[in-house]
Image (cartoon, rainbow, N blue to C red; front, side):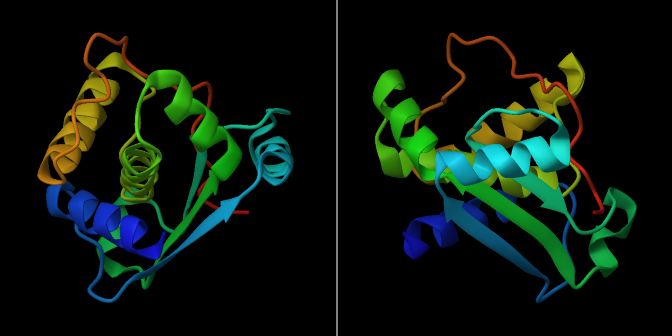
Length: 152
C-alpha cells in the first residue's frame, strides 16, 4: 500500500503547478467508512462517508514556504466499493484518489467548471504517467459542495 501511495504522490507532484517546499511533509491516513464519516461531519458538516478528504496545512500562496502540506484521509471501504462498481482496479482507484487529495493540498480545487477542468487534466496527466486510463472519460466534471478546510 505504501508503494502505491508513494507512486501516486510522485506522479501528482510531477504535474502540479505549485511546488511545495523541498522536504515538506504530509500524512496519508487509510481508514474505514465510520471514521471518515465522523471526520467529514466534524470538519465539513456532511454526515456521510466519502472516498477522500484533504486538509491543507497552508493556503496556496504559502505552499512553497510551508514545511507541512497537510493530511489526506482515505476510506478504504468506500475506495474498494467504488473501484468494484466502476470496473477499476483497487490500486488504480487508490492512486487516483491520492493524486486528487494531493492536488487539493497544493491548492487545486473543483468548485467551478474551469477549476474542475484544470484539476481533472492534472489528474489525468499524473495517472497517464502511471499507465492508468482517464477515469473521467465519458463522465461529467466533478464539483464539490464546499471547499476543504485549511485550518482547524
